[in-house]
Amino acid sequence: MSKRDYYEILGVSRSVTEVELKKAFRRLAMKYHPDRADDDKREEHEARFKEAKEAFEVLSDPQKRAAYDQYGHEGLENGGFGAGGFGGGGGFGDAFSDIFNDIFGGGGGSRVRRGADLQYTLDLTLEQAVAGTTVKIKIPTHVTCTACDGSGARKGSSPEVCPTCGGHGQVRMQQGFFSVQQTCPSCRGSGQVIKDPCEVCHGEGQVRETKSLSVEVPAGVDNGDRIRLTGEGEPGDRGAPPGDLYVQIRVKPHPIFKRDGANLYCDVPISFVTAALGGELEVPSLDGRLTLKVPPGTQTHKQFRMRGKGVKPVRGGPQGDLICRVIVETPVKLNAEQKELLEQFGETLEKSSKKHSPNQKSWFDGVKKFFEDMKS
Image (tube, rainbow, N blue to C red):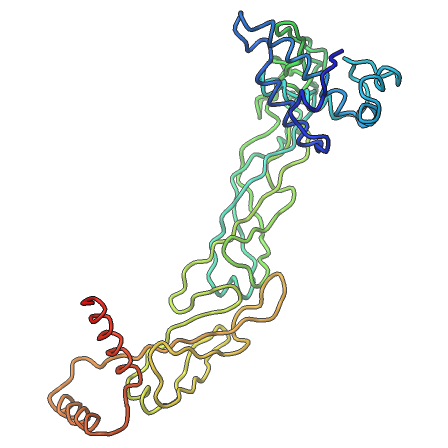
């Protein structure tokens, strides 16, 4: 048994967590495994690998670690914990299996695999996303073969125990001085082989098909939200549970509204006469028409909030608002009379002692200061 400090060997502190411990051992095992070393360094790597393995075996077992922390190496010997065994907690065996998979590409034991998850992108209008809806979708997927009930064997026959691995799904292989287990190449880890495959699915236990599903879209969903349909993914291997289908929501751009969380935004063009004199105009909402009151002297980009006319979030919370931003439009294609009237109007503004353009003077003052600073 090594007499070096186990924590020092693995390069970890005495408060190391189980996850950190496994990462440290994985790093050393990948670095010092003898089968990865050159011939001139194989002996050194073998010693370092055994040392790290011994340290990890002790520290990954709660009982051994407690004894070691209290009494050191003597605590392990007196407590009956022999080095090099695989007893104690399950962490050592699990981590060892994971690391050997990384080093050698080995697989797990004989097991059936759950079906793969699927993803479907569902395009919705803003109205559908806000109000909720039910949508029919078609999904290309694999489904369990009905001719063989998913076994992959021809009707009247059954899969047989794999003669290579004896039904274990793994075969033991010698890697240098170490014996490791790898996925059986004959049955690919299932522990079974099919001598007489189903003529419909050709032994796969699955067939390709397009299935129709109804998706209940709750009110208030937004871009990026996902709806999970349990069990609607790919079927598992030979009777294993199927995966799930994740419906990804994608909301189409709206010609009038933009959404930000629970709030809706829209631009409302108004004439400069309405902006100057004030007035009322109709604006749209997802609930119908609303009346927007514009006060006299309204400037462009002024925002008006319509309380409770936004979106009710799907995860709860208060309903959002509709925020209308007015855009003052400059009149175009004026005739001679209109131009003359505007010129007269402009002259009256210049003669007036009142400030009719609240931002103009401060802007020009700022421009003047800017040029003066450039000269200095």
